[in-house]
Amino acid sequence: MQKIETITSNKIYREFIIIYVLISFVFSIIYLYYGITFLAFNKIVTFMISNFIYIALHNPKYSKLINIWMQFGVAYNISCDIIVFGWGYGFELYFIGFVVVYYFYIFRNQKLEIIFITIQCLLYLFLYFMTRDKQMIYGDADFKEAIYILNFIIISCSLLYLHKNLNIVQAIKIINLEKNKNNYQKIAKHDFLTGLYNRIPIQEIINQNLTLLKNHKLKSMCIILCDLDNFKTINDTFGHIFGDNILKSVSSSLKNSFSKYGELGRWGGEEFLISIKDIDETYLKEIIDLARIKIENLKPNELNVTATFGALYITDIKPDMNLEMLIYNVDQLMYQGKTEGKNRLVFKHYESEQ
Image (cartoon, rainbow, N blue to C red):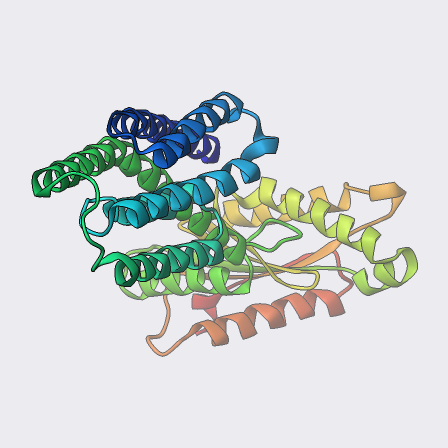
């Protein structure tokens, strides 16, 4: 999508240069006809340089040079036209038109946008106060009116022509912003090391399931806490990089075991929290124990890695029971497994404890 935006912007920029070349050509003919040599020379030089720029525009290494020329060339030519003719011939309209073009098409840096647009506006005001009382030198009032109308038509048609592509560019920019926003939200929700949900999203998921269970929209839910055994010793002995690789391997194993049944999150450190809903109790015990065995069989670098699971299975719940109470209960089950020898599952049915 970013590539499409760049291609479209370059296309618009080339169209802008073509329009600028055509305007320079038209006015060079007019100035030659009326014998305004200085302005005719300006337009001819502009015409030649802009033609060269159009050919060289496809080369990215010239982009900054092209931008500088366009900004300087446009401002210089318009200023010369206004100084020679005076105010009210319509040349001042180009400042407004080119400010729009600069803002939408040329600049990628917001600070540069502000700086150059401010310069254009100040130049506009300076030329106004400098030339507003200038007496008419070329032609009569009808000539002045004709040139004004010509400039107005050129500016209007040019902006209308570019407008259709402006909508495309702005639409692509909005899509890119939404895409970046979604990416940032995804990053914020997921643990950077394991790719699992971090603490807040998994809490929200459990709270949602808890609400559904209280409203009798779920038959059951289960909260599972998994803690790697002796992980501090592994970190201290083999280093944190090795420890991180262990966490990645274990999280991948847990994802393979539980992702089709529920949601997983990294609770903190070497602890993982899993939320399962509407699974038969007996079958769920088998799933959890199989997940434990898979971790035991990982054996990274021939190292024995095991995990202890605490699981609280809930089919009925008191209205005042909340997430903190449930986490406390499942945490106690996990620590019970630790004290009983580790590498095991301690599973309890919450309803049977009432």
